[in-house]
Length: 179
Image (tube, rainbow, N blue to C red):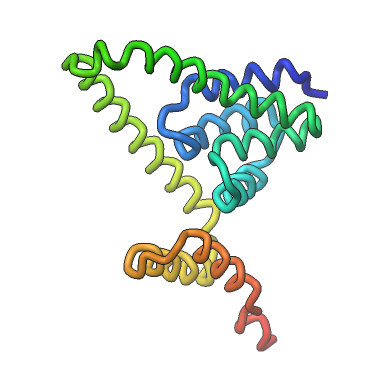
């Protein structure tokens, strides 16, 4: 059984080294929770991120909460959630205290520029990995294309698109019904 302290410290490290939010945390979670600790499967991780996207709150916090709950119920949920948010709280307090003094410093600006570029690369890598695991057949390509069009061309709410995609997956596959 995983200790609550181990849950807290692992998620604290993830929260400490994850810049850019929940999507940037996905590769770290995959490496730590799926590959190293074997607490969850890749499919469970994708499910947690999908549910976390649809529920109120921060995706990283939601995913940590789901994993913590799976491992140790309410105690695990609290430990993982506190672990992932503690670094942000500490950093926000420190940054708020120092930001006014150093925000105009060109080195600080360049550091933020570098961090943004790194986060973009992490997100692209995550999207690619999720694409490879999530889009497996013609239906997946069609749902992806429809979701992209609804989001980008019609500016439809992400929640509505997720609900429509879930509904589309419930439609029987016409190729299977012929057999």
